[in-house]
Length: 311
Figure 1 (cartoon, rainbow, N blue to C red):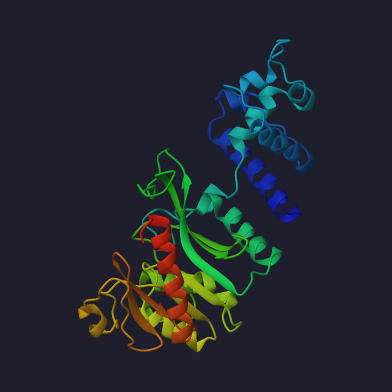
Figure 2: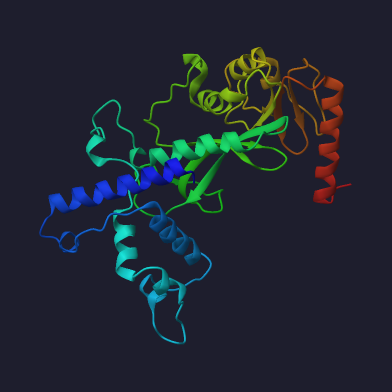
């Protein structure tokens, strides 16, 4: 976290504490008389919180236990338990009084953590330059609490959580850009993206926009692959490759109707084709010549047979 973000968190936490005490002057927290938080104390609080991920205990109270069997001296030496709990209670990132109402067109479901998202998105983009091969996919951050846009995806390890669209470097796995999914009714209108592109295309465009016209090779799955998207990216010196659903707009009818034998592949053109091992797989690409891709697919087919024990 940079100094600007730390200063913002401290200022918003102090503001929220004063707002709470003013709104509820008779509450227990108001009678305690909030002591203004500063950056050094917040860093101390943050370090103790991170340490809790290493030292596992059943409750926050147990970290301040004076028992010689399970005591952790660094906690009471750093700050009192009451002070820690007060900071945790009032830690805030945005001014509640400025949040648009739910019925307002500018309502933001992530308003309370939007400064964090904006800060880390900028830092992720600045800290690392990805290699030529990049990919867009979705990830699921585990969360089982109450949340309007919480997702259930059985195929993911966490199953329940917050879905995040990510642009990653294919070699290192580094997250270059991300976007939190806010629900089906959330608006998505990235700059420069045509309206007809559809939701999945707009997601790719939004994540990839800073890397356009730099010669990157993008890999995606069939949720994102479409003829209009690949054509648009090609115009901005960005090649793409991915599996594609046969009902996508613009996908050749010849390939939809084609019946392939195991291992067969029709030679339609250099940009769209399909391949069959045990099931049909349709791929679309804008950068591999047909001969190279044919060899690549053949290698994948042999690898699949070896993995399954087939001869």
